[in-house]
Image (cartoon, rainbow, N blue to C red; front, side, top):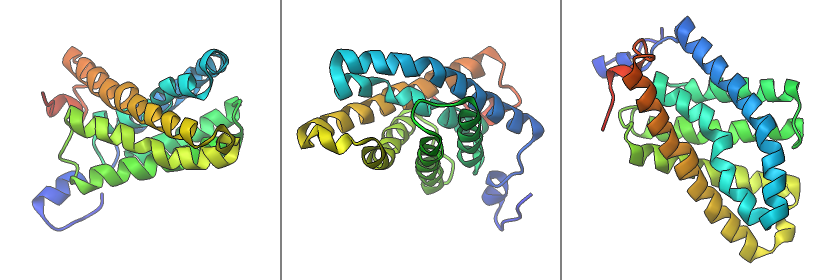
Length: 201
């Protein structure tokens, strides 16, 4: 356990339990499977509406790490969950290349860890989760634009795609995490996790 002065700090920096690690690994594995199914959907949307329509499902790619953080509520959760997710995706194979798995994971975890550190791990409301979900998008979008040639779209399409992706991150990641997390906590399945003990309206 990390020792930090102050009663409130001692409650924040806790060692991960075996159950925490198992949950993070399960969510990372589930995401890898989800990504397999999202790839053809992504291609279909791209064929129908190009980069704008494809951008509508962006939030689903990020949800697993933020959901783990909402349930466990310990610093480092995003680092471990997105890290495991990147490794699992790399082993399973991805249409976007192995490098993209790790770059995307790094972008996501930096934003999530930073966001909850700023509020000292005390804010778990839906506005906080939606803002975090939206904030996860721009950094990865910048790297993705360089890696996948988004710059050929033109500035107007780039800006619209970015806005759509941010909205997708807010809704299909941030808001959906709140709904899923609270539903699971209310069912009693998460009674050994922080989300069950500190549910917020």
